Length: 258
Ligand SMILES: C[C@@](CO)(OP(=O)(O)O)[C@H](O)COP(=O)(O)OP(=O)(O)OC[C@H]1O[C@@H](n2ccc(N)nc2=O)[C@H](O)[C@@H]1O
Ligand SMILES: Nc1ncnc2c1ncn2[C@@H]1O[C@H](COP(=O)(O)OP(=O)(O)O)[C@@H](O)[C@H]1O
Image 1 (tube, helix red, strand yellow):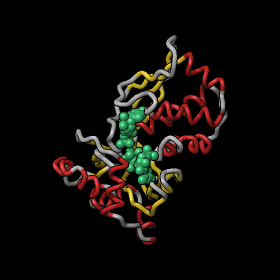
Image 2 (cartoon, rainbow, N blue to C red; image 1 turned 120 degrees about the vertical axis):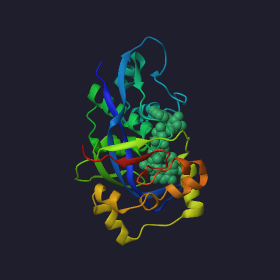
Image 3 (cartoon, helix red, strand yellow; image 1 turned 60 degrees about the vertical axis):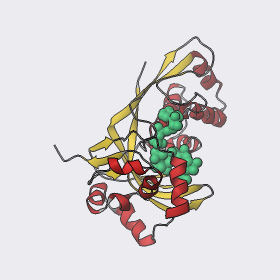
Image 4 (cartoon, rainbow, N blue to C red; image 1 turned 90 degrees about the horizontal axis):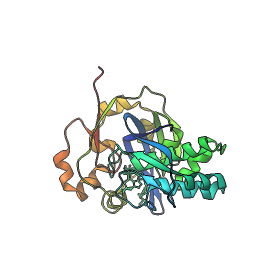
């Protein structure tokens, strides 16, 4: 069976630009971490029901892959899709740590959508797939588009490729399970600020290497301070020269050229 890569991402920067209901509008540079990825593949099965084979800390119904299946079924009404998942399970060799700000669950969901589109010849274009992915989670459209580097805005649904050579990145994930909604909530309650128009242009237009040489970890990510205030033990894992990804708990830094 063909294996499909679901890569991790980091947020080179993440700035809040406003609020949308319970969500937050952001401007963020997403970059793929090529060497860290899950592997997904279909396998034939005989047992009943939707089967996900892999090391997960959640139920099948909570799994982003199952949510992607439901969203794709609702969008297409495809009986071939139903039949595929009656006769096949989906296996995930999980390497991306969970609760880590590396987008593992979102990347799995996006890869699953692309696999179904390819295997079943559904004929959905990348924009249609991304819109279906947005119903599963805010980070899913970025992974559907598959750009190595992109500016992501709205609440995650606007994905614009950023033309630069992707950085070689090193990641480190402290053993702290961070809740994304709790971090956004803390930001809203105690740290709320919005990006100015002038700063917006600087972040949106500057390449990632320059940004990481000019910014502190605090300035690069508006969610770092609220995460530290909710999970004070994070501070023990922070090292100078490292940056915070998404809502955490991972840190990353560019590797020096070989
Ligand atoms: C912070 C970021 C940065 O890339 O990622 P992670 O650190 O989780 O990987 C994202 O904004 C997270 O994306 P994702 O984890 O897909 O979020 P979702 O499942 O859609 O939403 C979980 C919850 O986070 C909050 N949320 C999410 C996205 C957003 N733009 N504003 C929000 O306020 C909402 O409370 C929402 O109910
Ligand atoms: N396919 C999946 N892979 C990993 N975690 C998943 C998946 N589906 C649902 N989850 C659940 O999502 C939460 C963390 O999601 P994940 O994408 O790994 O973290 P983050 O958004 O911080 O990068 C956990 O509650 C986990 O159990």
